[in-house]
Length: 380
Image (cartoon, rainbow, N blue to C red; front, side, top):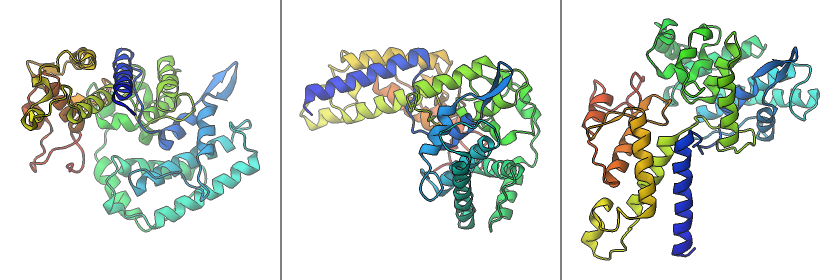
């Protein structure tokens, strides 16, 4: 690929990012079986008859089941456990309906359920719970185990007591009123773990652009369990299916949209790797990009600066050159990763931003930084 073609592709990508920031349709994260499974379980009464609202999501699950009965693991072993348990729950829900979605016959679906059940049982037998670092697994796995028991599927495994202890440590003092108040918490990203434990009618005020903290699975749980149908939440999910990384295939990511994440990571990394002025002097290459004469007039930089400034200022994070905290997207709690990347990108764009407040905001008592406030372990 020659330089002109590469520059054209880069400009198209940047324009896509900028346009996505304008309408909150920016999100190309990897598709997540877990979230897709939750969305596939949404039904709506239409003309007096309950109907599966997103059959394409259920078909996506079926199309991606592996020969061994499970679904893909991503970064860790527990990913595969969560994915397969959620997909298994979805298949059980559909198998109990007279007009289940998907192209499978009832017999074929039962075969899939049996294989998935065996796969989960095998994975749980060898799961090293103490080594698991997946965010929220200690509340999500027990919740799925309980839901599957309601479907007459039971599991026993060596780490069951350890998992219960972690769950108790996390939720031992849980009070539903934490979710009913105005303060946002990371629990809002995983409301599916609280089905049957909280009144979903009392959490609707936490919606932002129709979603529960940009989480398809959490929004699905809310939509399935609030007493009045929420059109805004339905439209959010439809938007995530259409404009997310699945592009209408039925697959959903674990978060949508992710404006700030995509804008800062793509632009920040591009600027660190590129040399916009084609300088050959080694010392010149070591200078920050924004100090180079040609930088400010670079067309894609001129597109990015207003978009990033507008996005950050719209959620009141950029004040007097300081960035307190940044989010994956405007509807998500701030995290250290995206804040650090936003600070780096702002500086590379010639918008000086200090990391001091970020460090104070995310610093734990042991001196390490947390990804999110209130998490169980500090982050490496």
